[in-house]
Image (cartoon, rainbow, N blue to C red; front, side, top):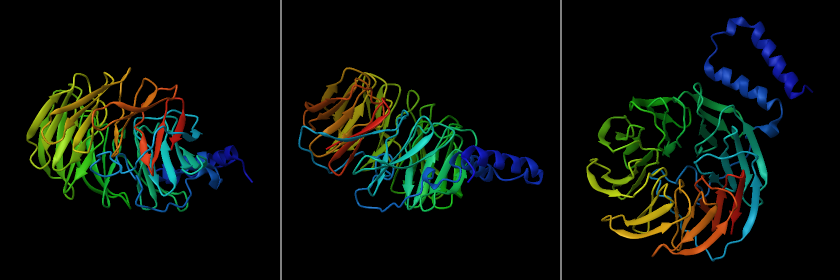
Length: 396
């Protein structure tokens, strides 16, 4: 049997000797490149069985509206159930979960699948560019973006580990959002795309004029995105018609959140904007005091806003009145996770916090001895977090 390097050399010679295929499509080139890494071993393919359940978190923020809520309940203190060494750091996007499988990308260009019961690796594949955002799982396909300038949105069929499709979405740094059978993704070239999730065919595309690093969200028949010029857009889901446009005072890097007819936008101008999702009119502009780099979370009648000054501020989602403010010892550029009895917060001060939803007091705190810049997950009464020490931790 040929070694991986022998297989790679054989593929390269074949390509050199067949100049007549110089016009091969870019997807074919990507497939050959990936095969040179995978070799002939199926253990390096993302081949596995995914069984959907009602507990799944198939995308960043769980739903298309991205409200970051979960119905799990906890008894404190929590105990470490397992930890997984990914041997690489993580971006700001959180892992996703389908069935009993956790899937996460790394800044070393790997996509890992981990058994949530044991914390053991199931499969992994290696790409050629950092995966800084969250993947999306649609049916049996895992779809993820990379910051490459060529094919940068890739769909892998988990039944056989093959590439289903690959597209150029302009370089992907934000987390795509899935609404029914449509996939929406923003590009670093300022483009905003709507793809059919199963086949990768383009349904519509618009140019926002500035790089998109903010993760989009969708609500009812609208999808929302924001760019580095601080502009927020609403488009109709099916046809990409611009419904409205709103300008904040600085770049928007934080992801967008929609809830009960309102759109919540955090800007680098240190303000939270609460917009009418249908009309784009401004309900409220609230000064937070420092830059907002991560999505606000909405639940329990409140909106929770993280900030680079290390604070999480809770406001009424109805009238914007201040409820409480929590202060950590370093920046927070992750999104809080809202449960009925606790608000989970991860900070660059190396701590995980569980805060009281009523007044923001600390219910539980755990020192990971490593900074946390990846949004945690709550799943089936478990708390899962990826830390800067290249490990994923599961608490129960």
